[in-house]
Image 1: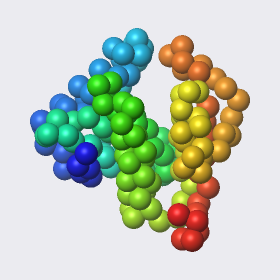
Image 2: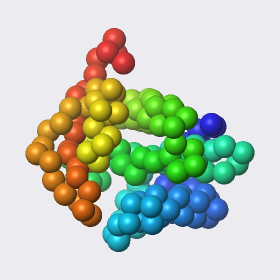
Image 3: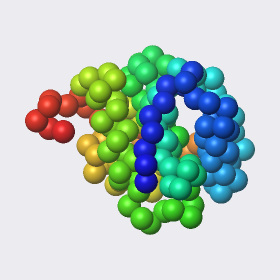
Image 4: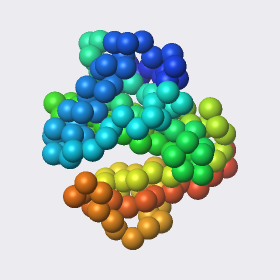
Length: 153
C-alpha cells in the first residue's frame, strides 16, 4: 500500500471524490448508518490516503486541535471491505500517528472508537475515557492517547 498525505485544500477533485465515495461505502452503506458525513471539517484536516494500484483502499483524517475537540483528533479511519484482514490498518494507523507527531508535536489525541476496535486502538496507546455510548446504533467509546515522550514512540 502506498500512503499519501494531503492537506484538505490541496486535495484534487478526483482525490476528494474517491475519499467521499469510500467513506460512504464503509460508514453509510456497509454499516447501514444514515448520517451527515460531510461535516465541514475536511478542508482544515490532514488526509491520509492509502492506495493500491492507484485505487484508494485506506483512509484516515487528522483534525487539528479545536477543530472538533480541544485536542488533536483522528477520525474516519477505514480500510475498504475487500482489503481487510491484510494488516493494512496497522500500517495506516502507524503512518497517521507519525503524521500527527510531525505536524503537531507531542500532544494528546482524542478519538471516538467503535466498540469492536477498542483493542486495536489500545495497541497504539489509546485509553478509554468514557462510558460506552451509542452513535448511529453502534457502540462507541471516547479514547485518548496521552502526549508521548520521544522514547515512548
